[in-house]
Length: 219
Image 1 (cartoon, rainbow, N blue to C red):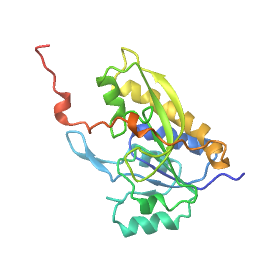
Image 2: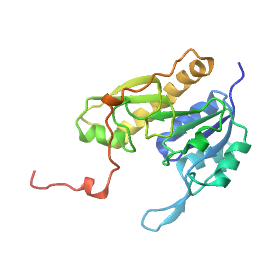
Image 3: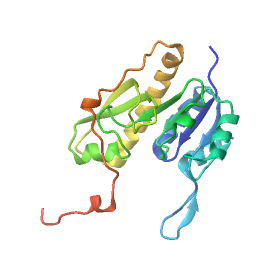
Image 4: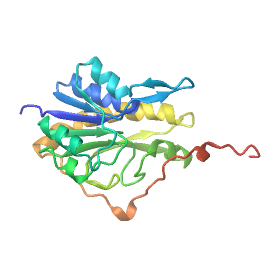
């Protein structure tokens, strides 16, 4: 079975191990889609996202639309690369149905929680805030909702008392890359069947705000 042509959509460091795993496993990544360069640090130096830097190092074309919803240019650009599958890892924008419908094999997402728990944009941070002892990674088939798609495979990761969002993110990103490589052959052959999420057991988490980092020094 020939490997599918993949468009990889991701932005931060968390997504890089998944992109590198696909490249090393011989999957043809025909385009990397990532968020626009942003000013970073006190000097506000315009900096490329980690996924862009990794893609360029491997000679993969990069596309950085400011938005993907209601954007005819993004729709045509992503259609014209003739990808069979989109792999989405911490891209940072919700994909509209029109984009999810482009690839014949759909869109696979790597999410840093054991779905249906911790749907949303900061599952790693909230799992620590809430004192969880175990978290993990789930691969799923994307739909237009926020992390509501049918699940494929899961892997669990213990949270140690020493873990911070940074150390846990590193563990989960490596586990996610491994899980992605385990997921793809079975998903493409039909051996790994998508399992609907139990919406009654779902938990949704808010986006992190600056106030969430405030410390109560009286405690």
